[in-house]
Image (cartoon, rainbow, N blue to C red; front, side):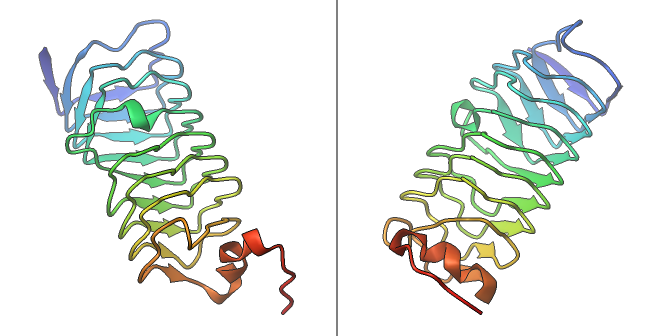
Length: 189
């Protein structure tokens, strides 16, 4: 597999010219269209994706190691099919609706200003992760490890503390209703 390092890719549609199956290190992808592309087996280390569209990209055995996503559209990504070894990334102002993190181990992940509507975090380990100002409407949390996670500014979540681990997780007073949804009670301020 070819090794590509410290290169910038600007405004490229990889739908027209597929991204070469290679190992990318320290590369920056800016305003690129990778939607519906087959990124299976590609390795990304210390890379940055800025204002890219990765919606519905195939990421089977794709390695994301210390990768930053900023202002990206990433609808329906199957992170559960990625290479789990060293899987680590951060997300800033990203649209991740209907993406799947099922059974992934992504401790200390930072989600900042992201829309995570309908995401699947079932059996996921997001301990010590940060969900800063994130919309979690319809996100699934079942048997999820949220220990020491910070959800103080997250909103629209529904988490059952009886089926997920929430020890030492941080929630705001406004978000407590999201921990009581299953009881169908009315909480007034």
